[in-house]
Image (cartoon, rainbow, N blue to C red):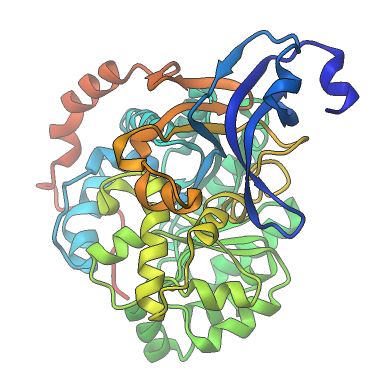
Length: 454
């Protein structure tokens, strides 16, 4: 116990739990019968329950039978798209975009975005997600929801080159205005949609702006093999090579999906000047029947962090990162033909510290340790589906479910206690959203926000 941990009352002490910790080599471990002392939204100490028993605290949580994990991070999603959950099913990617999603998105209002984001945040809090990276339209509405509900987020206003210079300018304006808002819980990024919807001139301009303003870039890239093959046929370069020649790889960049990353792309990603990360959302790839998945092993071998993600619920049907964690382990075993890869401990590393780095918060969250922000979830392992426990990491990844998350804490604030949401009124959100659905899903107008042609 450090002296500062005992000097003044803590705002919160979580005791009698098992705590997931990282050692100096970033290996996953577990500390039994432990206590977490939280002060000013930060972890002040991780100590024994006995040592914390007599410390003064404004609030205490007895977490007996529970495991404390760093809050999960959804490294790439479109939170408002929960309003489109189940609307475009069993379709190839091109039809999914052109026939359903992009026509419907031409109807979006700021209120639709707000309600969708509010419902998504409720779902994420209940699933133990404390932070998400979003890339969508009307992002001021999403930032307002994040500020109100207490989550943490990396937000970017998406744009296409078809919108003209105004699209890029709106993305920059949003990023500068909302950076550091919500008491520092909102960080921002520039958000060009993808190399196939944003031309080289706009990508190069975005890269220049990112360097000038100290902003990261968040975009879709090499989402699937078809995109890579089409880019090669039309332009003689892969999507990753486009990002290299336009300077985007010289910024801090978060690439969504990357299942179309090829061996020729790996040296470029390895030599990139900025912090480069990839967000992987395996459930969507399975639904679209894409022939590959994110090459996690190859990316890790060259030092590229791979964070876990869900993409939007219109393709993934949920924003449950817990499911993404289990699927990542299973799909990677299948893709590599090796049951020893990806292990449960490796999956937990991707879900925690690597995901934190992917969204640019590797020094703030992603582990439970003194000085880190108090983004913590408590997972109940007393249910029959999690007993007995022979390997705690395997139990967490392959037996536990998001419904086992009992408590969610962000910045020391309890957002869910014993499965009760404390910062979002779900029934009122659902009622208003459902009243708005007929106008939202109407496609009779024949418009779409963009054309999918890769």
